Image 1 (cartoon, chains in turn blue, green):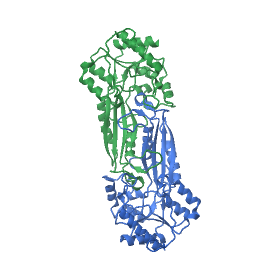
Image 2 (cartoon, helix red, strand yellow):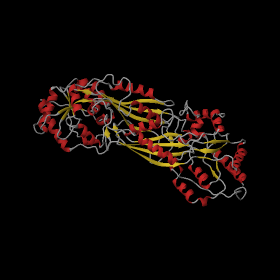
Image 3 (cartoon, rainbow over the protein chains, first blue to last red):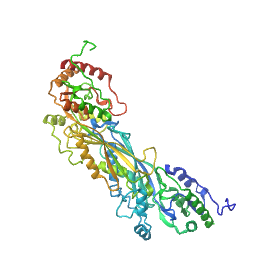
Image 4 (cartoon, rainbow over the protein chains, first blue to last red):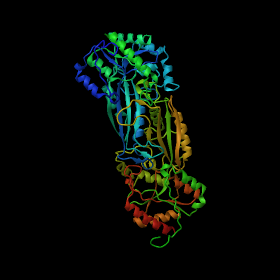
Length: 320
Length: 320
């Protein structure tokens, strides 16, 4: 608009500021007022590229089920000398539940979870297994570790982008200050999420998870599983006019063809636009692997910001 | 002194205000200046009785080793969508370590730990197995639970008072606020203690624990085990002149003979006095099971306080 006085296409902007808290409001909005969002294509700018000089468009995202598992033992905190040996310990119960949900091999022991999974395409498997751009090495360096963990039977890219994963994000309860306190807490909670391939619905996964946690609860404690939030994964077709317009724009700005990749994160609005508005969805973003997402010193490069603006301008022109 | 103008015996008072933080200073003091504490008997007032009308003297305490297990994965916090499936998760590693250290059956899997254990006496085993005063029922009520947990092959009293126990007191790391954050933390720590029968030295137990934790660490993480503090358990002879003086004093105040019991907690100064000063030790206290030790609303009854004063006065007279 600044250069040409007008946009080459009509644009409706939706800002989702609540995603990290679950994004419930926008999910209701899209489902209740789809007419307000009528369009020919949806464009979401919330992804990254593998490196400054490797452009990429995303065609796959994982869904998520975020839970809090609450375990109660005695009706008040206990002295571990007085009651150690006969008291239920909710922290220990959580460790038992977590370990039974996922072992050191990365396999998730939730009956029914893997049953609905679809096999990735032959092209995907070939790219993931060959790893021609040495993404696996890059991940080691990004994390500062000497080995990758998880299911040994699947390539790291398949594990990150297409397999369900289960992670513990925090455990609340007991004494967590400096030094020592010999307490057996009455209550402890663990924040546990599942990332899900698009073919597993988040609500379904939550139900399987909840049932399994109850089965795994050791004697002497009562367990409640809270559904904190959920969102669906999506696989969008890379072969649509908007996606071709996006790929051409990236090529013009970066000087090379973009890769078509999946991403392991969750952007629930992508599945909502795709399924409710029933339009092609373009996931194009400019984040870099060293942006420290969800970590201290999270950043976004100004150079990526300006390159992104130039790319999006071209995308809109191509789209027109 | 208020009533008679003088004490019937000479008294030296030592106040330990640092016990819950490990009590290092007093341990050094007793070992370096035993001459300052020369005496014919040591009297420690830091125990309880089973009920208001059941007086008791303690002859056994467990020792303790309090540790912090620190697990490090990646060099910074990670986004669980981006890295879930290939990243080491220190919280999950802690759950694996904790579960391997102690299963749902209460058995501690630390090689060498049980080897030095001595069998309790036939009288002790008979009292614990028969439970003539229904202590087990009382414990259920105190905790507000429907069943006791722990090693099924041993009576609850043996588990509380004479068996080693392992408890998790808190787990630090990741996100523990309200709601959700999808982080895989770089570091997580667990506070874990062992209660120890007197025949297992706390330093020895720490070394066995540390070695075992390193063995159990899953691939991809580095583990450090910190020794926060330790203290020894003790079994004092109930058949000494000071103990008989204490029993007589309790009988005078409560109107019945005291029980001789062990306690599961740790009072490291008791072992120090017993072993370094080499004198009979009397453990006589007046706490009640509903005092909520180490819990919110911890209390000490005024009626127990005054009854305690009267009992201690008689104890000193009997001792003289």
